[in-house]
Length: 242
Image (cartoon, rainbow, N blue to C red; front, side, top):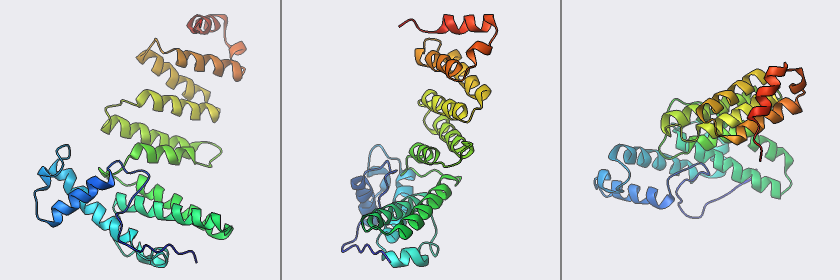
């Protein structure tokens, strides 16, 4: 069995975290010293600071467990916050990298499966930790979906869009809609893909990249010549001249 002992106590980390380790350390230190968390970090309110402390302290325990205990039930015996799940996924990734370097194919496959299942569970919870960038989690799950119909990839991309609308004021919505349209088009669901691109154009008629994508879709999928003359004329007129 692969082992990864930690000689000293470390703060849990994840590639998806959006709060620096030094900030986590400061908040934990202030909490343990009995100081007011609302005055700890100016840009973090007291409620978020309390959640960060609680989730990071819990995740630290898992992060510093012996690897054998992590893999044989140490995780299941403890409550799982979203950040703790993210830290567990990071442990699995680290161990799979170690297994790869040693050529242990059996462990690699097992650890990859554990990491994916754990990340999917995290992404399916109704909570949202201030410690994590959920948009990146949904994007990762979407991009690494192995479903040939793109059903799973579309599901996670929709989750990414919903999260952006709720927590990011839709600032990345157009980019995400383009990605979502690409997934539908790749799955040969042309009506849905093109409908999304049409909606994007209504939002921003000056977006030449959307015109290009629609034009390429019609041309590449042999839909262009199947359209009536008026429909072809619309596409031609919409195409950028540069």
